[in-house]
Amino acid sequence: MNYYELQFSLQTTEDYQQDLLINALAEFGFDTFEETEGGFKAYIPEDGFFLEALDEVLEPYAAMFRFSYKPALIPQKNWNEVWESNFEPIKVLDKIYVRATFHQPKPEFEYEIVIDPKMAFGTGHHQTTAMVMQWMLETDFTGKNVLDMGCGTGILAILALKMGAKQATAIDYDDVCYDSTIENSELNNITNIIPLCGSKEAIPADKYDIILANINRNILIDQMDCYARVLKPGGEIYFSGFYESPDLDIITTEAAKYGLKYVAHKKDKDWVATKFVK
Image 1 (cartoon, rainbow, N blue to C red):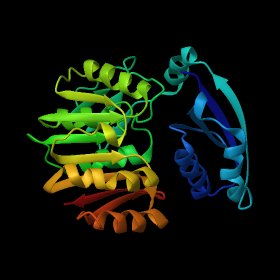
Image 2 (spheres, rainbow, N blue to C red; image 1 turned 90 degrees about the horizontal axis):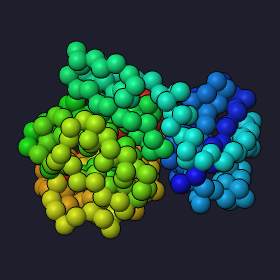
Image 3 (cartoon, rainbow, N blue to C red; image 1 turned 180 degrees about the horizontal axis):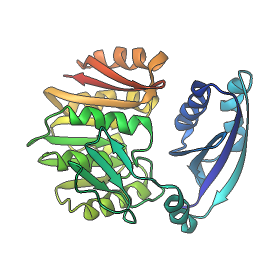
Image 4 (cartoon, one colour; image 1 turned 30 degrees about the vertical axis):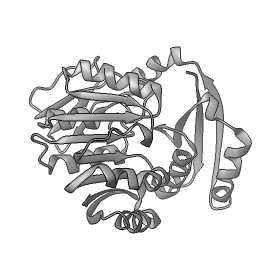
């Protein structure tokens, strides 16, 4: 699959304005973002890139602050070189170390995850993924059945299994993410993971103790009833991929319709990761 790379340049010093653009792009269908000096790069599958539709989505922000972007078609064969040149290891609260196959291991960390960079969102670099991992460090996964929606590279499902989960089902609609999850599971010697390619229709008729859903606001709202249906009473669900305002109130209101009660949230810049219980 070929991807479009869009290089955004911003004439602003306000971080939240860049985050506004990234959030709009994520809802449009962009699935990978990389910060650069003076802006960021955004990536979307070739078949999802429509220039006129994108300009219409971005038009309200053009009235708020100045930015520009340049699109370029990136063949998939070049993607690994792009990632390997930019991928840096990630540390989460000095307990989780996420590295690529070409980095040296650090056995002093309690949890080490090896991710082979591919064109799949979810390497741990984005605030939303890191915050969900912070929540996971506060959660008992021992013997639990876990569902990871929008799994990307499979990083959250892999961490859950390293933390003692009995089994994890990892679902993503992108076949690149599906293949990446399988490969990364093997790299981490994980065998009790069920990778599935699809969306909410792919969720098995099973019951889960914990659900991890790091996607975006609109998809979370659309899939909320499915999550509630398969989550056990007393089960925990962690949402991320959206902003504190206005998204958190919208998510909380929607979740309440299905018996999911807000507990607390973490915040990094304007991004949040929330905990709910059924």
